[in-house]
Length: 91
Image (tube, rainbow, N blue to C red; front, side):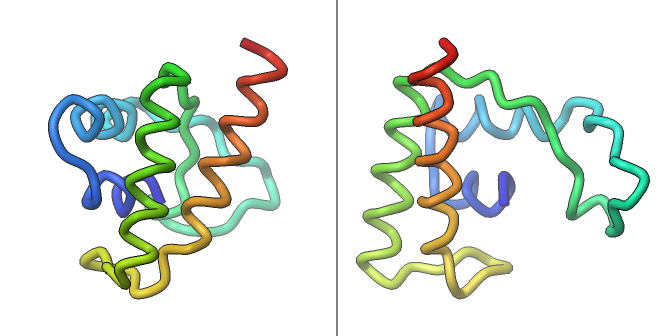
């Protein structure tokens, strides 16, 4: 989802998200299956960038945009809103 979201972004927001995907992924739980496409990363983006990502993804969804690998991106916005909500309680 991170690389797919990055495909919707530009500038510094895109660069910040791609920098995260270039890091070493978190260890996968023993019951986790999947290739590198299912790698998980610690997301340490500022709340300002997260809000910008949500706005961009919501706008892209409303316009019917797609990414190179995903035709349905509506779930991306929900995932980013979850991160925003978590940051609101922990940051």
